[in-house]
Image (cartoon, rainbow, N blue to C red; front, side, top):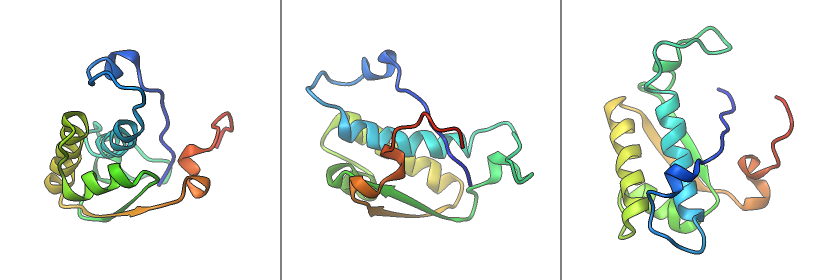
Length: 122
């Protein structure tokens, strides 16, 4: 389908509870952001000529996550952690609204291409 990348702004992180690390929140944010990117677009074209706003509609959607805690919350659609819980709710709402069939699975960090350094142009 494609590669989506970006940086998390201090404004977004500033909305979360202060903590030493944000790994779980960032994993959940990545899935919610990608799903939003491919769902709420204004008919923007994909490289293959398809319509980005319909790219996930009614399809099997596979997400790989390298954090067990975030994965469990995203599969469940909720979390005791308010920040991850809100992101899980957003992801669930998006996937239900487009009738996507999500599958989420664990991937070791070493095998996760999303964690590679990204100065490469694809």
